[in-house]
Length: 486
Image (tube, rainbow, N blue to C red):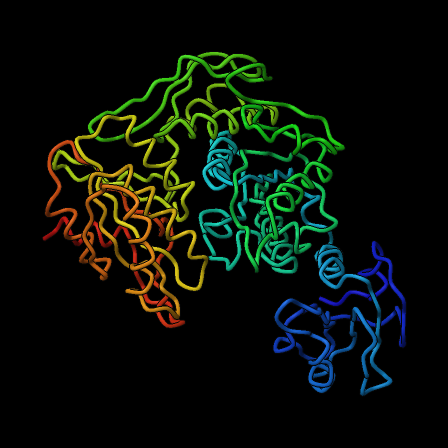
């Protein structure tokens, strides 16, 4: 597919340095290694690498157009050169034009927040698909199109990959698209120039703050809030203490959900434990009226369920479809229940920081288990603070902690475990150290008794362990099945 450069630049401020706007472009790339004859290369001066240094190489590879952020030596006068202020924003807007603005051809829903994005995304998908329509997903779990899931490196992929995914959804006949819009995705201009029909806010708490993420909580909040300048209707959780700051500069209509004054409110909240299968129940009033059962445990899933029900109602989905979808929802790696038939529960959850760990363990405590046995580790090459916080949360809230491996990356797993023990030492919690994660699961299953709840934290939907830069196959579900088979 070839597109004229003028078409790609139609929504950008730019300066034509040399060449012609009639230049035909065969494709776009920000990775110099992907450049072939006739392509457009966007040179981005990034935090780690300056793409401008690859200009001689991409010209040799046959690039027809260079989009630069600053002056650069161009080794070929026949190459068209365009100067822009922000290469990342330019890449996003040009990618939309290249794929003919695919997100505008579906009803689009963007979800932001610290917790609950993935779960709410899948709840909304289930509501839409049970109504007979087709919905694509972009998020932490990957790109979902008609039953096929393609893994992604980021919650919100790079803009070119994102627009390609939308184009694939349109080609597959999707009517709706729901995606997780991360604060990093907004900050890094991966959704620059996009407009959503609906923007959704779940909640906000300190996370993703550090040298390679957000400099402080204020920047984190600001990035989240920008979604509500990019949509027609905003749907927000008014129980979250930050919701008014989130919508302060909103340019859209605001609708709300919560347990107090809101367009949809929840009362009479109940925790349901049916033979280890945990769920929640509440009475809704407002946009939807009546009893709603959410087939996942925890008070936070009341909010996720309300959010999805509120969105479904605003989309015009039938009431019985919304209720059925929420009652039977399953989200891979999000408090996912694995049946054992042995009188104890096994759950898998993606919680991998102090806040989410505390949230999921507090949730399990509300079901009055005999004991909570928590299996967890922490990722390598990440903040040590996360290790201390997770260790302390598990030490306080679980009867037994089994400290193990979780993507040590290029660090020694025992060094990570020593950091986790710093947090555990602040509590009186009992723990054992078993570095091999399969052996840790075996130990938990071997020592579980009737009424216990085993929770595997940190990996969730992931199907690998990253060790010394290499991803080795590992699945929590397979690990549990192996342990039970013993």
